[in-house]
Length: 299
Image 1 (cartoon, helix red, strand yellow):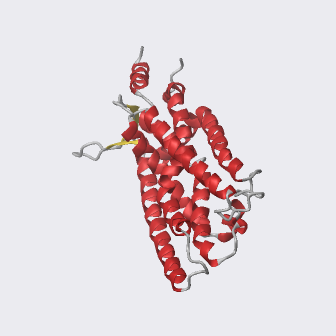
Image 2 (image 1 turned 120 degrees about the vertical axis):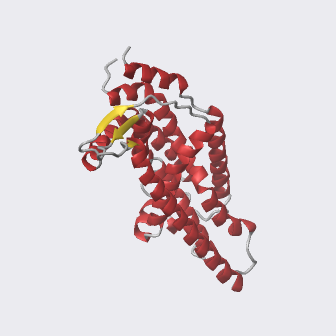
Image 3 (image 1 turned 90 degrees about the vertical axis):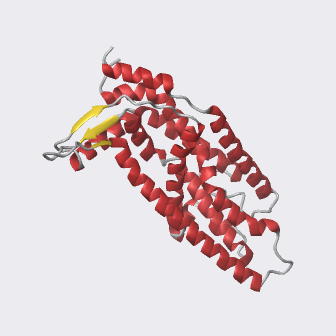
């Protein structure tokens, strides 16, 4: 057994999926979906149930949610096979930018995955998806091509629900695909691939993880875009509350109308973990196959 074989074996024995964490998040997401579907069919959410929420998918509200898991499953299946190839492409990009005269090699790493580690790892793509979704939800033409906002009753008190739920459902759709970017980065991290940059005379060699280099950029995007999304959403919601309270609709407001916008946006990253974790499990299962392919070891 060579060094790569030993590294792979050590990795496999220490990599664990925290099923308690996965199941608890999925139960949260499924419960939220069930409540939303219930309220929709009771007429409490002003959706046009016959047309569905996503214009590009067939079916009504219930089927729309099922599509999220179907799309996540298909994405996870595709990534099971192609993640090593994408990681190799990212490695070539890294070489062209950072490592023209650098030395690349694999380090044996102590990789221990638990519930806390999985939450930290999967929340980054959830926040990145939130940033993308917020940008798209503010471009009305594109947003309407994904989310059927015309299904809402055109009265003033529903306008904040339109903007917040539009953001939420666009986020859930993008969460199905965001790991196409993240799983190759994770594989570079989990393989222990590092780059030893060319040192100057008298200087200590600089070593950086190839996956970490990409992840820093993704963390920056996720952090900045999430902060912007929350700030502007809060400003919009406060502005709507002030306007609506000055001129309340006949009969006043229901608690649902007041709380849904805040709850939808606040819980959005956790709900995005539903489809993300499905793909994350597929990634973890694929490691035994993916690591040797990235390391160039034939088994």
